[in-house]
Amino acid sequence: MKSGKCPKCSSADIYFYEETVGKIPGAIWVRGLTYVCFNCNYMERYLDLNEKIKNKLLQLNKNENRKLVFRADEA
Ligand SMILES: [Zn+2]
Image 1 (tube, rainbow, N blue to C red):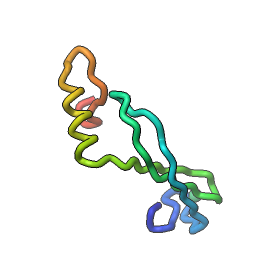
Image 2: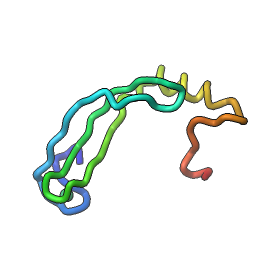
Image 3: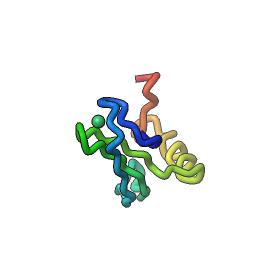
Image 4: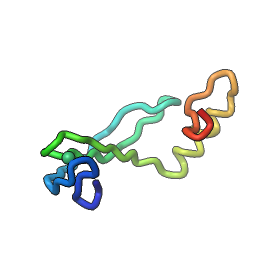
């Protein structure tokens, strides 16, 4: 989608906008880029997760009784 082509319908009618996405687990505010296909309305969002934010999230995640994020390959 970042390359300007929709992965669902192959349209090149792609637009993007930047926004503060909101809180992710751990009450961390992040920004993101959202890509929208104006042909089929498919949307992709990329969060601006730098190493500092990722490390903070993984640190908070060490509480086994209150995990905040889950690995997709372990679900
Ligand atoms: Zn599309």
